[in-house]
Length: 105
Ligand code: FES
Image (tube, rainbow, N blue to C red; front, side, top):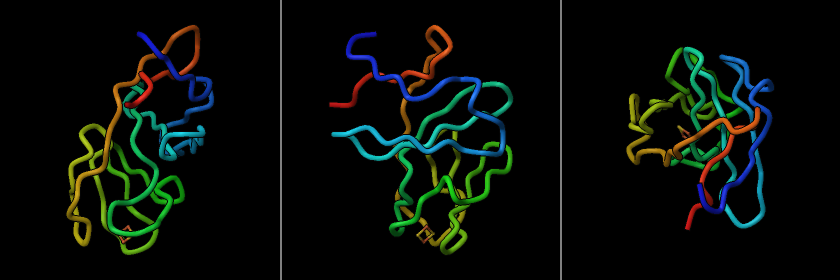
């Protein structure tokens, strides 16, 4: 991968407890473990200014702590209203024990 960003150690990411990552120049991110796979999405809900890492993960769903909307962690697709705009997702890889994504444009 070119322009790789290291987000956090893979071992920090526990299923059901999303990890918040802030890197200058890109939107805040959320890192999740689902069935032993790692997924990365934007951290901010698309309905309002809520931090999804303060929400509730159940399997591959993340429920927003503000109004209860939810998204698929795997695809970013909207699962429950009032959210209507999908959540941005990133392709994650684990390199040398760290969760990495390609730097977004
Ligand atoms: Fe997330 Fe409203 S801010 S559902």
